[in-house]
Length: 616
Image (cartoon, rainbow, N blue to C red):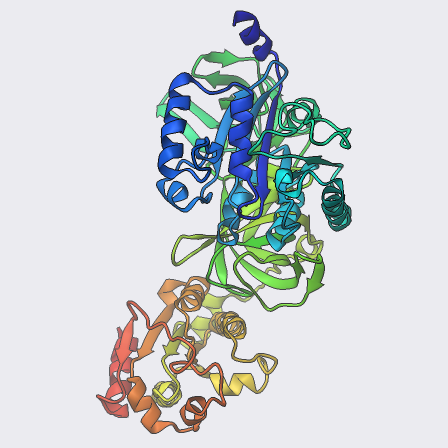
């Protein structure tokens, strides 16, 4: 036993995933590996036999899948839902295996498992062949940087171990994966349930001359070339008392030594490492994967979200890039909508500026699309509100991978891998102007601001905005009304009324309103603006102190009775497919600055209330 443990100490570690479509046998395969590799303790074997009787799907035989399917729901349904990680070792290597779900709705969990894997075992049911989810998982594995793949053709016992059946699946997968950039694809015929070609060569496949699955796992190369640069995302500033200040985090790439000069990438500040502190004392050098606190020889302004690098090997920054995006939420992803982005320890707001194409996972063909649906894989251009330290994912998983978070629900909606920065991000700079907003406001004699009217069609937004402008104009206030119908005849004439077009419509209006406010004008916008996220985006862009949200809360029944433009009648007749309030949602404001119900007060009363609010 001591000899075995001493051997393990010098072993390398292989991280791999099992993936593929549902019921292809992923959990059974891992259970069989653990069983045949004699990695189970006596109490685990007793528990497995008991669970097999209670939840098993193999009659009186042991159900190896139950070793991995740990959730109650998984055992009851006989499926994998979450990612299950298992550690085991042989005399030659240590392993961490991630069993990822096969169901399409849990694709996001497969991405999680693949993000740290060195190789993938893609399972295929020999009696079924390649399925869409098989292809999707293979494509995702390639996107996540996995370069070695085992095609495990499972349930060969159900096909009488037919070589022809195996070769057909091998050829189909090889043809599909030919453009995915895998360095190696090794096809192995197996029966996870019976143990064929799992740890030993099977007598049922004498026509197969390759390795068993375990032999392959023990020999596949996983050595990584050490990075010449050093990447250190700051997780927090360690300040336990007035006499100690350090920057804590985990070395993402490369190494740093005491005496090295380092740079804060965003600000360019330089300092020299004076100490490298850990729980076990100081170190002369910190290497990749080590969690440390760096002490520097001088005070610098850095905090969580900054990235440190060696001064001689600086990192790049950008605020626009192209990325492969995996959409992982039921709410569709829309161009122009604001999301929060997390890249390493950096957070910022971001929007998708262009969806170049979606990938059809069955054929890998590029398809045009205007929005992203659950499990879509697409190439997109994104713009952040501030420059970020970045790199291409193929060079750096730390600086090339990110997640998108919905700002309203705080749900993770997408994962992305940066392909490259956009050159124009380096060539476009803000021009300093000699005349600023305060100068224009002083000339006008009042502040610029934006009054944002929102409500259903027919609620009275345009009428109110027009009446308020007349009243303000009489008081010498410089104003301008941006009305939905007027703007759609010019600036936004290229946009329709789909959710994606509505988001882009409001994004453009918010940008224009901000520019006009900067000119010192009071801007009155009259748009349905049905989504809370986009109104929140407009408020953030313009600034809460300069943004007045007016909810024209006139009930739908009153709006339909008015039906000034005949839109509701057409929508009820099925002639308008995206009519807000009828067949497209309107999300009422939770806490508007002002609420006006034009069915309950006269136009004069409403304007007077708005003027009083203006005066305040």
